[in-house]
Image (cartoon, rainbow over the protein chains, first blue to last red):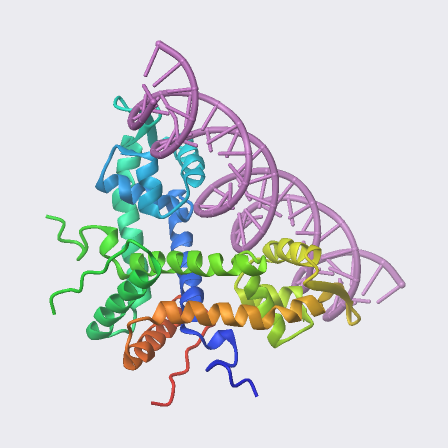
Length: 156
Length: 156
DNA sequence: AGTGTTTATTTAGCCGGCTAACTAACACCG
DNA sequence: CGGTGTTAGTTAGCCGGCTAAATAAACACT
């Protein structure tokens, strides 16, 4: 019976394990982010801005692989918190540029430390080889799932 | 400079890649689940019920690693859709049992197929060894992150 | 120039998820 | 028996995410 698939239950899927692992990860990071009064997801906006301040709203949405309305609301809240500010785009009156405030810039190190703590927890008990392998495999999977994301294999 | 950590940017973290990979996965599965009018996350409730019909609300929350209010709202919606029904627990008047309706049961195969499609997409281009390795590594990471989740190594 | 189309963003409203605060039933124990 | 504390769920309200529909500026073409 049930000869169609390899799996008795969805729970056997690697896909399922990926989802559950990620949920656990989000919970873990979320708990740490609360220390700096950030909600899970908001740090991703800041990561992009720390790298390239002054992005346009649409570009942010693209980079985060998120729909525009999500950015609208997140930016409103981040602006209310005083972490970013929106400035009109001189080249296009439809657009705006998102800039970090000093307060936003000051969060970089704390959030960096939080992500390092998460990294440590995630990789605990894995050998150096296993860590590299996991990273490479996740990048491959991401390339499979995310159109437009291309994984360039590390020079091995 | 910046001798403290190995990473220049959070984007180098395996942790970051895990989060991004999972987001892509959620989007992919979500797109497919729309075919059966399910929102991402709802299928997890059904997975538990397909395995053990008649669970109590609290038990569902525990298994999904979700807070009770989340279950309250999800069940209300699933009930409205006619996929599950709540029946009073004869042994405890505070509690209730969640039972699948016929309609809920009928979703098992379609959702199963959807997850298999996702699985195929996730694992595309990975060798059999790589697939096993990915699965094992994800389980280890999950065990690192999720208190109470223990990964029993497969007999190798 | 004027009309039509495409592009950037917002609004409204829904869903999954959370915390905090509340209610109601059970359980225990003096 | 009755009071106290614990346990199961709900409500309210917030945040990240989505879709559909509206707005408004830029562009494109006659």
